[in-house]
Length: 405
Image (cartoon, rainbow, N blue to C red; front, top):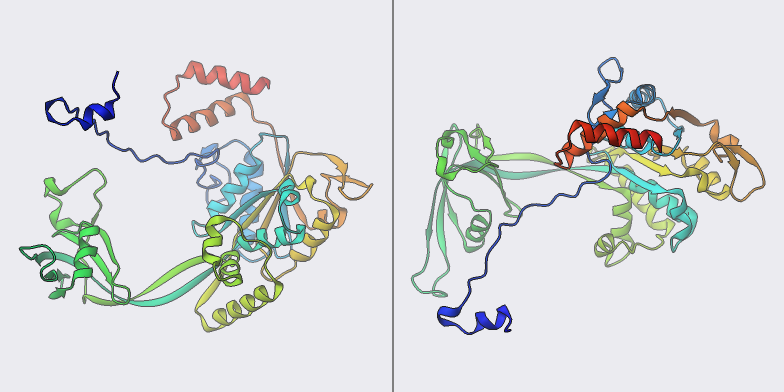
C-alpha cells in the first residue's frame, strides 16, 4: 500500500486534502499552580478554603504574621523554617507567601541536595540562589503615542517590489485627532499586530513598538470584530503624545550573568552560567546602589525557598549565617521533614539537622498532617484547576486512600 504522502504527490482528483485541526493553547500545570496566596482575611485569620489553600490554619496564620513583619521591615537577619511530615503543605505555604508579597516578587526554589550535584562550589551555588531571589525594579521614562485607531489607509503598489508601501494612520483621544504618515516598517508592525479601526494602541516613539491595549467601548456592538478573548478599554484622554514610566523587574543574578561574559544573555537561556567572579558582583552592587540613590531603581527582596535543608553541610550553614546578615538578603524559607538528626560534615546531632547558632535565627512554623476531609477539598481544587470532572464518591475514596498512606 502506498503512503498518504505518495497519494498526495500524484495530483489531480486523487489528491487527499490534509485535515487541518485547530491548535489549542496548552498551559503547563504544576503541583502548586492553583495557589494564589495564603488565604487570610484582614485580621490575619486563615479561611478554611481560600486562594487555593486548604487547612494548616495555624501555620498559615503564622506565615501571615511573618509576611506583615517583612512588609514592615522588622525581620532583618532572620529566616523561616517550615517543619513537618512529607506532604503537609510546606512548599505550598512558601509559594503562598511569595504570591502574597506580589506578582513581581522574585521566587527562587532549590533543594538542599542540588548544591552537591552542580559543577561549581557550594558557596557559589548558594550565592547564585540568593541573587536569583533579589529583584531590581528599574524605572525609565519613555515617550509614547496612545490613542484609538480611527482609520488606516495603506497605498499598496500594483506590482510587487515596485515602490515602498506608504500609508496614513488616524488616531484620536477624547480631545484631539491626528493623522500620521506611515513608513514600510510601521505598516508591517500594524499588520503583524492585526490592528484595525476601533483598536486602542500605544506606539513607543523610540523603538516604534506597537502594543494593542484592546478595543474601544464605542465598538462593543461590532459583533463581527469580536471574539471570546476581546478586551474592551476606554478611549484615551488628553493628548496623544505622553510620557510614561516603564518599570522592568530583573533579578541580580540575571544582571550578573549578562555582565559576566560576552554571550551572557544566551547563557541565561542555556542555564550554563558557570561561576561568576566576585569583582563582577561588586561592580553590579555598586551600580545598583547608585541607581537607588538617583531614584532610578528599587530593590525588591524576594523569597528563597530551600527544601530538604537537613541535606546541607556545615560549610553551607556557615555561609548562610553570614549571608542572612547582608543588606541584600532575600526572605529565606527553609523546609525539612526530619526531627533530630546529624549535621552533615560533623558528628553532632541537632534538631532538624541545623546547627544551633542558625536555629536561633529561625522562626519555626510547624505543619500538621491533613485530615481526610481536607484532602478531599485539596483534590477538588486540583481537579478544578486541571479541568477534570470527579464525582463526590471518587473524591471521598481518594481522600480515604490519602489518609491511610
